[in-house]
Image (tube, rainbow, N blue to C red; front, side, top):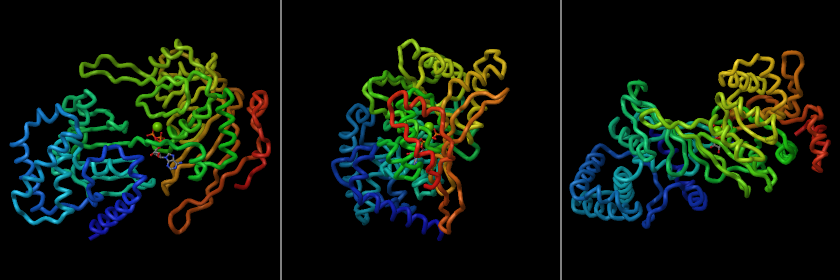
Length: 467
Ligand SMILES: Nc1ncnc2c1ncn2[C@@H]1O[C@H](COP(=O)(O)OP(=O)(O)OP(=O)(O)O)[C@@H](O)[C@H]1O
Ligand SMILES: [Mg+2]
């Protein structure tokens, strides 16, 4: 009963989304086929319909030479498959509703050429993440919240076939000897697959969708992730040569914020972006994008972020933008920030600015140099100027919860001072977090820097302690 309601809700909200034709057109990763299908209602097929589908599927495989199909363009291949499947269904003369008929044709087509049941989800631009916990349970994240979908695979084998298709497209392999793989979909979405024996309850797939239209700083203000005066401050931070560390938990909006802020870097500067998986989309004219490479099946050929950071410094960048620091590359990055590449930006996985600094310290020690803690902290204190803390709150919203300035060192400790913060007041009856942004009243040292560069350096924003 509960599952039924959930499925109906899912189907309904989907229809509403698809009615908004514009949203589908702009974000839709899969090219629409010639024939317009009815909006995908994600009906669960009955056992009889499932058997019918599998019957048609095997007949199709008997007729069609798949090796020939794989040689032609996807659009044309889909067209051919569709016309054969239609004919096969008609030959059976089984009464089917128009919707079920469309769904059967689409599902067979997706199974043969695409990503099977996942295609229906990839078609929906409101879905941010797709999480497959075994063949029977597929969750999605929409509007910041997780929901179970009625989508399912036929069995573990079916799911494995789709996983295999995803990873083999990027030249990788998944099997018992290498049961964990990172890959990427054609639209840029990041994929992680882990299979038994490591994943105890069956093959598991996590897809983080690639947002086609990245949010700008103004969009983030509209979404209440920060206020307009905080955005004004961050724009000047990007325009002056301050090094910025964006800190936050998984999915808290770090990459989105990094992208939004980086777009305010002056257009005449040479920027090199370094990422594990290219996500940044800078609308600047002088950008070079570099991406790491995992080792091949023989464990060779790996290019790490650290290799890229080192190489990028020989490419005469004005600034480097690192997607996320995770390890020893933090050392090379701090050195770069301290030696002529001011204005660099990066993100780190941490829950508070203090935590972010401690994580950086840890990462530098991973670089394998025997540096005393105080020396590492000194490097951090002089390299990083501004720390932006992001959080994903339980109502699904992502917010800047703090902006802090790194002041320097006091004895053994790095001193941070908070400039803006978000204060939680509680939760309303709908579960939405209530709170308020404010400035702490402290005027950051970087204002002098803004002034020197001829920026607005509006002091009134620091008196704004009511949002
Ligand atoms: N302020 C916001 N309001 C609503 N959605 C947001 C906001 N910021 C980011 N998002 C969305 O949240 C999702 C996660 O964002 P993003 O990839 O930037 O997070 P992240 O912290 O970099 O995640 P990860 O830890 O996986 O690297 C994306 O779908 C993005 O579009
Ligand atoms: Mg990220």
